[in-house]
Amino acid sequence: MSNAEPITDNKPRQPKPAWLRVKAPTSPEYQKTKRLMRDLNLHTVCEEAACPNIGECWAQRHATMMILGDICTRACAFCNVKTGRPGAVDPNEPGHVGEAVKNLGLNHVVITSVDRDDLDDGGAAHWVAVIKAVREAAPETTIEVLTPDFRKKLGCVDLVANAKPDVYNHNLETVPRLYRKIRASARYYTSLRLLERVKEIDPAMFTKSGIMVGLGEDKEEVLQVMDDLRAANVDFITIGQYLQPTQRHAKVERFVTPEEFAEYERIARAKGFLMVSASPLTRSSYHADADFAKMRDARNRQLGNA
Figure (cartoon, rainbow, N blue to C red):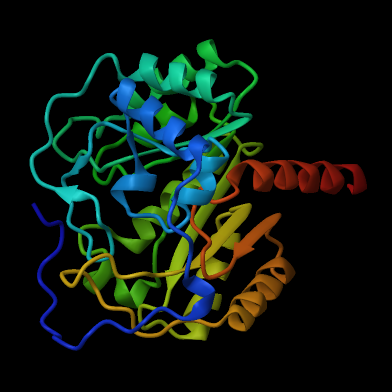
């Protein structure tokens, strides 16, 4: 089942520029990671969202777990995850995620989920169970959660934040003007308020958010998103190129050049983000382990200079 309304513009998709072309995954470690995910009946956003970095990440045994099933209750115009009526929550999933993290030997794990608007708590209690299971199976592993917005479900953000992940990530995805077209079931200021709320619960917790570019936004709108995130005390921003998954999804308006990404990174650092990742292939979990270490070091230097 498709997760987006058909795009009416019948123009052919633009060819990818050279800086976006990646090799097909073929390494033995990639195959081992894939087998482990299948053996434990786990879903990954790497596969479901058709991430271009899957070959590189899985070769390093870095997989981003996607919990609460593989069917989303929303139909965002940018996302390749299936939309429909999800099945029952798997009570064995937390244990399987913990086992996978342990077997992969991860120093840092990123866990995300589909939207589960069908559940009274949006899946928040399941999120807490997964965090607990990973802590028990791999106590040295740092945990980064990338949650949905839990829209209109009070207390859910608090529940997940109080489970003490090391990083709380929630993506704004795009600029406010494009929400109706790109992220129609979400609200920009609901997502911004979520990130602000996490800092109210635990000021020391790292917060993170990301956007895609190439959807028709302009530079000033991107800079305003940066300012909004800094006003919410968000520590880490990711900026990557949007890639159209299928003809049914929102089209790429343009391919942003590496030089423009470098400029976004320079500006974001000047605005005070502890960590910035901005490049054509940047995704929320791309190099997340190394970026977390850098962010932690930056915080320590900041505290040391206070």
